[in-house]
Image (cartoon, rainbow, N blue to C red; front, side, top):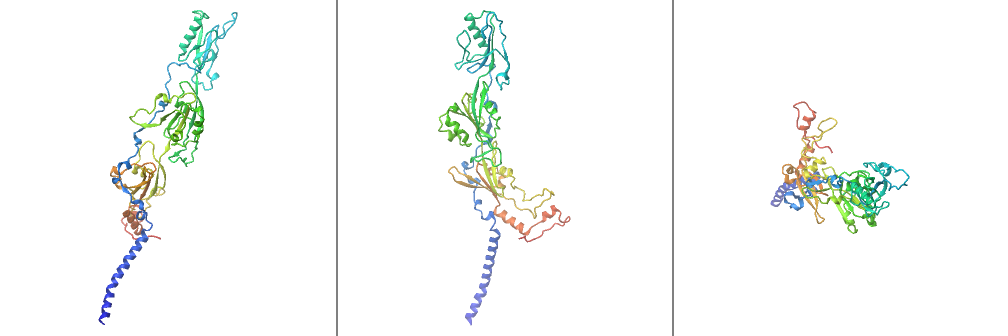
Length: 466
């Protein structure tokens, strides 16, 4: 009998323990069910390294704001006050009684007049010319009747006239005071270059074309003839498709005498932006490079004569490689473009792609102008994780507190190319949002939406719909 009483007492004291364990187990099961789909509680991406614990070499970024864009005027050349003759120039020559030659009993002819459109379809800007066309030979000399070839290389038209007159006077062919010599510029010498343009449709760092459907013309080639003192980069680009938008191009390659290199001409049309230097490193050709942007305060990275083109040169207009970063989580998922001219920090990046920030998760109806978020508003998500690639090919998750970043500039780290920005709620924000969704504290909703009369706003506890 004594043993039965002891057994009964033990069982009676054991029941509360079993009941407590069952209650705790049930609560754990319910909590697990409620939070099983919550990314802020189950996603390991939240376990990033806080910004304040990272070294500077991970956080540093190229300073785009210290770069300046090159003026297009620096890609041209300044014309001299007087045209200087050289091989290839076509000049109009008239020497009375000598060129053209006439019989003694015939009257002296008058010099013919040529207008630019008669001898050069692209002769805009040239004045009318007098005389008969004669081309300056490759050695810079001019051949005329009755005298030895005269070197005119490096002379102005005025000096050339004096030299030709002196040559005929020295030979006694013309009489002093009665000589009539006219020298005019009929057609300036020309330089023929080949221009390849990597037309931007655009290109990303991975070499992919833009998915926006723009007309992509990679590697278009143009043969361009440039007159003397217009044989420069800016005129070559203007006559091969128009001046480029400098925000879409990275620089200009100039391959000296590249038209005589068959390997170069076959390689350029197939180049991908950003890979030019590696692909061209094995080609035996002298190359000058003019970047579109360079650091402020530093001297120009090229000499003025580098912009001047010569016969047989090849020009490559290099497309700018777009630098991208990626977004996900509570941010609109997608591929974003980093600006070229200024640095972008994490707060600016979230605002630029219209991510939620300090709005209490209220929404608005553009049709009615009314707030459509029920309850007292959800906590604003503030857990931003930046997944950044490292130099050795790995990656590191960086934890950024957006709330702190709005107050502390040190938390506003710059966005790097290829960064992945994932915005999530903290665990506390997730629990608070879930409680609000379940119990639907609609005090503010009723006040703003006007669903009840003045002063009748209250708190309703409504089970969440399933």
